[in-house]
Image 1 (cartoon, rainbow, N blue to C red):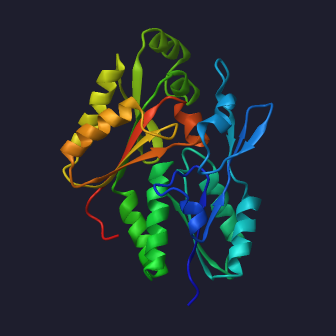
Image 2 (cartoon, rainbow, N blue to C red):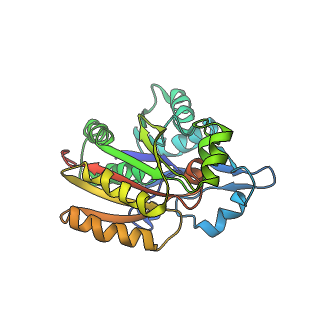
Image 3 (cartoon, rainbow, N blue to C red):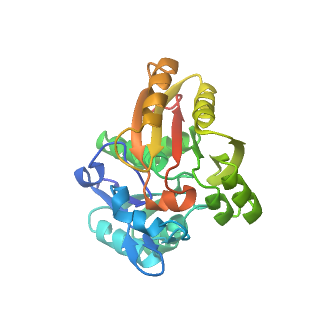
Length: 286
């Protein structure tokens, strides 16, 4: 039997540095367009490479998902190596990658089995799924078992972000323009959660120390965790992530805690300077 090949999109953040280049994995890129320049996203992009697209006072760049043609090209190349492709993508409610991958997969009906999965998440949440799929494939899991493992993980993943700028809630249609302007004037810090793949406003706090406490309160709701990841927009721990990691290690001493960097597609949704946390509850067999 030929090996299963895995495809994903560039709105992913890997836990393992250099992971994408170390395994047989196809990453189809999003494009970022600010009306002046177009930039091709990579999973390992550093903030300095794209922050000009988020220059002060400007709207965030438009995120252009990988096209149906781009996915079809990736599938066509992999079809020469395998008859089974697992295509795992960022939430269909946040980018158009999943929809275009689904459309492209229909071109291969009868020639190659392509399972397209909506991760209902983005960034490191997607990375957790893809890395688990690669490990399962290396360990000899069947195509059906790989799909079952991923479905179980998707149901046990939870993410929240607190945003530096309420304008991103306005641009996402989550608050009115007047609410965003007033919130920024008052220094309000909003929280959003990923529910069924959508960003949903949770609550607001008045200062950053309280925001960090709310992150701890969120994590405290889980009794057993398989993995916990802190997300920021640049490499290297910040004062905030150091503070959180110290306290989270006390709360969950047996849980692996990683620091991940979210990329430009996620930044177009939550802005620069935001901080997030993704947790994977225990309970699966992967």
